[in-house]
Amino acid sequence: MNPVTVGLLGLGTVGGGTFNVLNRNAAEIVRRAGRGIQITHAAAREYDPERLPGIESITVSSDAFAVVDDPAVDIVVELIGGYEPARELVLKAIANGKHVVTANKALIALHGNEIFAAAQDKGVMVAFEAAVAGGIPIIKAIREGLAANQIEWLTGIINGTGNFILTEMRDKGRDFDDVLKEAQKLGYAEADPTFDIEGIDAAHKLTILASIAFGIPLQFDKVYTEGIGHITREDVAYAEQFGYRIKHLGFTRRAADGIELRVHPTLIPERRLIANVDGVMNAVLVKADAVGPTLYYGAGAGSEPTASAVVADIIDVVRTLTADPENRVPHLAFQPQALSDVPILAMDDVETAYYLRLLATDKPGVLSDVTRILGDAGISIEAILQKEPAAGAAEVPIIMLTHTVRERQMNAAIGQIESLGSIHGAVTRIRLEHLDCD
Image (cartoon, rainbow, N blue to C red; front, top):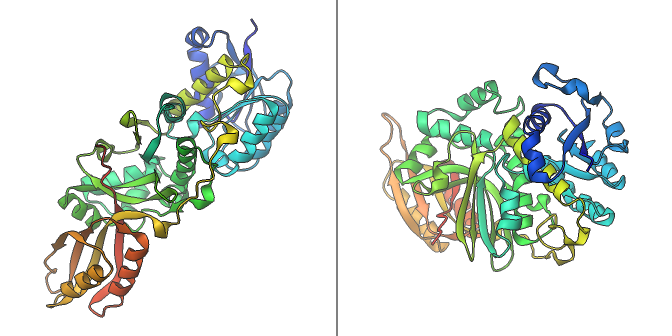
């Protein structure tokens, strides 16, 4: 049987890793796939041939569309990233009857509905395991391994840059800006780190996870997204005193009135396994009705960890080349006609607990004013920590943990607290999830 031919779009970090893993493990891959898989074409504006032994044996062009249009290519692997021209290239590959593998979370999150519909019409596959959490096989785990379950909720540390920053702030007492600069020097963060620290990258990934977990269309525009730039080392230390750690989580849950879809800094109990995922590592915790909680941990980025997922997708495509399209695993886990129109909840309607930090004038009655406002709003307090004022300071920090309440109520209460003359500046609010797995 002739080998299946692959055209790589991109020979950067992930593209180069994919080329090397596929060549290095060729014999093992044949045993798994049942036939050979050969990279015959690649497109790249520039690349380092010393990193890619054997690259001289394939056709390398600067024209990605030439690869997509080449009839000798069976599978197109899109590793360029971004929205365009990736979208146009993928749709052209599908129109040409080619299967597609991609690691592009932004592309799938924003244009996946269009791409999957086009693939369904042409009877081809679009595989995207590497789009979420790098080398962790989380897409396959939810879509196939947990297919017998109803997913109740899932949460994940799905951006290594943010996790590295928060870990360094906790372990070494460093400031956010200081750690961000180091992350940029180490190559963990881009020169413009907005996508990482503002939660946009995590929101792309959460969009995909929620879709395959709950059988809903991809809806990136409805993800509530909040970054970590306002988190201080004092917040990290206070959370520790209460027995919590701050993580930048993507969180989605099936609630009575709809689906929660949110990315934000979150306090979680330090005893939870996911609270102990540090540095640039990723982890996803899934709570399902039959199996209970399952945790998936590993490298969320990097050349060969991500290539591991890309090559696994290529093998999956090869295994199903002769299968009837109607009998393949659906792109978003559920049959296309069975996707649900369950609404995405507005953030105002989400219920969660909260960490509040406020700076108050050091005088009697201030704390009672704050607790009265919270009580009138139906918000009960779980714990309070009032620190001693710094030498010569007239203000004192007050830290509170609340029980679960609707976000709308908390917003109103914070507005009233901030209007008190005895409260200085804005109230810092961080959401809190217990992640009960019982």
